[in-house]
Amino acid sequence: MSRCAACGRRLRRPSPTGLGPVCARRLAPTARPSATVRAAPPPDHHVPGQTELDLTDHQPSLWSL
Image (cartoon, rainbow, N blue to C red; front, side):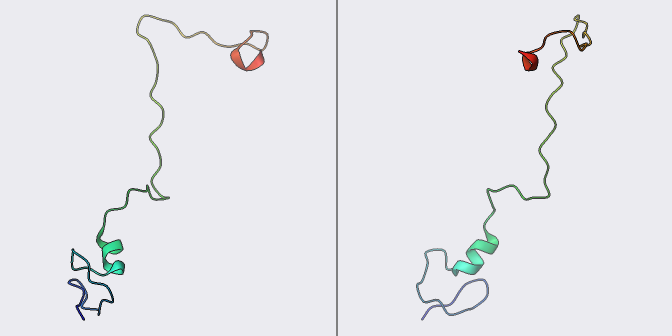
């Protein structure tokens, strides 16, 4: 039987990389973002030369329609 190239465990099924399934998962970069990584805040869509208007209670908005 062959052995894992990283830890030396006996392999039931040899792999082309020489790593066992446990070491392959441990050494492979993950595509999933971790739970501690937060997404970047949305960009500020300020347009130079335009003044932002304050919304009042009586002014219709997309949410009040």
